[in-house]
Image (cartoon, rainbow, N blue to C red; front, side, top):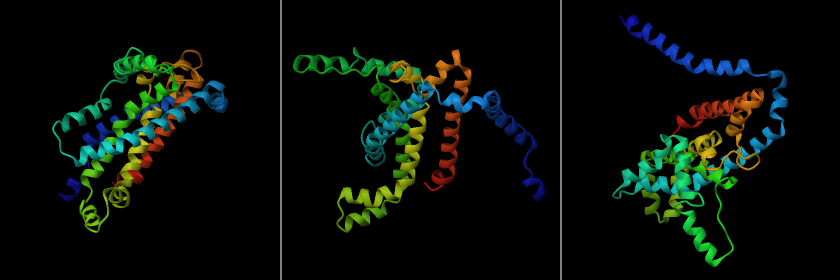
Length: 269
């Protein structure tokens, strides 16, 4: 009886094996189609190097902005009860389920030259200065699009850590005379640091792989907005070997992120 209970159900194992094959076969096919003899050359083209450089610049900038705005946002959502908090959380997490192209269209509605925010700002600047704000089809626009899709990953990770941490340590530090900033810096932040790192890495990986919102809002301009995913899309039409090589780079980065988070951070948080 004990042995029968411990034996895994064959049907369940079979279905799980099919599910694993569903994920593994496309990756195996990608590895099989790769031109390994020219792999280094494919990654060393000027367009590939420029796309890699721009991807690192944009994704790291988006990660920095996610931390800058996401940390206080996560703290507010986790620690302050206010009317409409569920709605605010829903708005923050909406990009997690929103189609990226729709996100790009929404960004155009707000941050294009005729958008809800930029148009009146440019009208004001035209009256008082010589400045003009242009986000669409710029590197800054690519950073904005990547931040839009990456920020929720940081917020949801850090908010969960703030909600589950033992707040008695903060209370003790406060009773000993520490101000709020000292409590956060010396007590709260070290306690949630694994989740902060996990959220940052997740945000970076999401920004690195962003495609839909970037191409819709910032375009696909070599040297300005063409990140790795956009370079893959363009290379598929004329040079599939380069597209596969760049895809393998993104695949490798994604796999490393997932394995690292699972083994080093998610189990600790």
